[in-house]
Amino acid sequence: MLGGLAAVGVAGLAYAHLETKLFTLRRVTVPVLPPGEPDLRVLHVSDLHLTPTQERKIAWVRSLAALEPHLVVDTGDNLAHRDSLGPVLHALEPLLELPGAFVMGSNDYYEPVPKNPARYFLPDARVAPSRPPELPSDELAEAMTAAGWKDLTNRRDVVVADGRRLSLVGVDDPHLDLDEFPTPLVEPVETRVPSASTSSTSEVLHLGVAHAPYRRVLDRMHEDGTDVVLAGHTHGGQLCLPGVGALVTNCDIDRRRAKGLHGWPGPRPDEAGGAGSTWLHVSAGAGTSPYAPVRFACRPEATLLTFTAR
Image 1 (tube, rainbow, N blue to C red):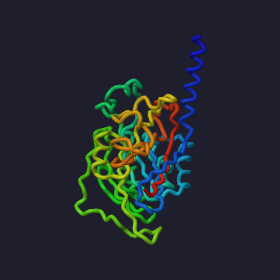
Image 2: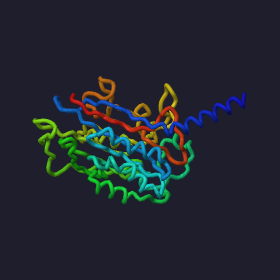
Image 3: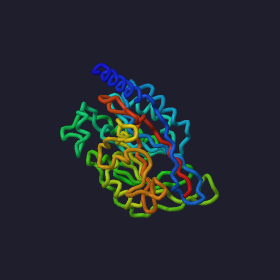
Image 4: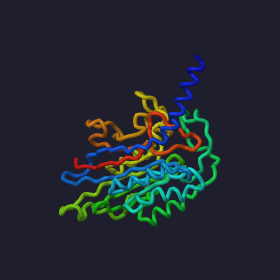
């Protein structure tokens, strides 16, 4: 009996390790654009937690450029090792040729350290006050910015994607309490600009970006009038139970919204968002801490969001 249970446990652990390599592309449609507006494809990547030896993950991330998204949004935690900067930039290289925007996560700033898994079931499982070694987040941000991506670290910006102008607002990592919601622009962002894809004009889409989907940040994004908020951090729960889903989120968002497309602050009649609510997409991410290289019923992912007309 004990031998059988041990065998099941070993098999489950082996599969959970294998699942970290079963990279998946999710496709999600969000009816958020003004009527008559052509589709806009947005690639959401998050939580790569890349180490220098993860060649399969690097190749998969590079392959995502073949999707030809109009915009790439990276919601942080790209690094997982002090020598990961070069591999991360190599992985992102084809995507950096496209319009993009980014924020940083805690593991862009600090090197992962071993942790007791039980801590994730505590009410507040944030990083301990004593900081682990720092990672080259400044160099990563400089490289992304030099490629033309918008740094949304507690700031606003605009980006042109497919000839259409989107307004952006982002915050630094809420998991480290670094978020400072930026004040509104003194000069209002233009709401109509010529579209390269149509002879008409295109409405600005207001997009919010954060690493960790803490409730206080989502509330501010909603108050700011964002149409869609993109976040990561949760790993979708990382270890999930079939039929139950995520057991933890590593932040104060509810487990039901640990990954996928939802509405904030409440449910919508269409079962994913709703009248008066902001669309929220939480990525389950593509990696894990190198000290916990397992995922169960929660494959590593990136998401191609297709924004369509309402």
